[in-house]
Length: 270
Image 1 (spheres, rainbow, N blue to C red):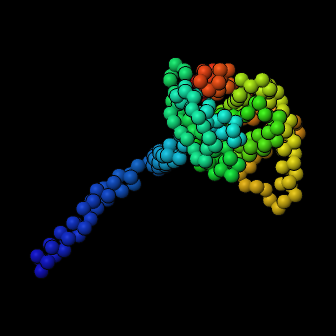
Image 2: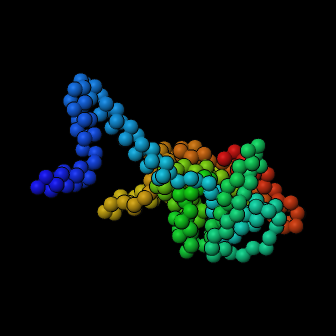
Image 3: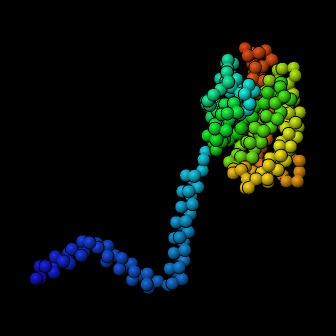
């Protein structure tokens, strides 16, 4: 009988090895001042909440280290990509997929970004923009300055999609509008291109807003462009915007040096 009771007690102790310590802790807590206990619990809760918040913040934050080259077909994006990455000219054709390579900025830090050339064809733009937009530290929007007057509407529509995208608006990457092909005599200046785009984007904003108001609900993921009640200007955006003139071909053609110094200076400031 005695041996059975002893075995039973040993079994209970082995099942609850921490019970004596828990009981001792409970008795000590009961002897403490209630105000002290409340303060201790609040402090402990604050530490736990802070740890949870930091874990969520650090794990959910996306590192934006990409520079996206975007523009219409034949704007010179791929040649510009080659010039920036290797300094060399390369025969190009219309891209049907993305190209990426490390780009070392010409600054004291020698910052390195991932330069990504996205396809300019209208059937592929949205697909690749959706894929890479959340990683963008900067967007280089390449414009063909030589035929800009003919393409102003298409350029503005593409820019409108970019600037009203919810992710891009929230992350606010730098926007560099590279007015390419300045080596061609009929090329428009960066200042004129900016003025024309502001005018066209203002018109687009009116027509798109009217279209949305006539529908039941709005298109998901879009934000209002600029400030309500005022004609659109690029300085109304929450992102840094800069227009630069460049030529991926250079004044001596593809075999000569490219004129991309202004663009490189802007990239160095990212």
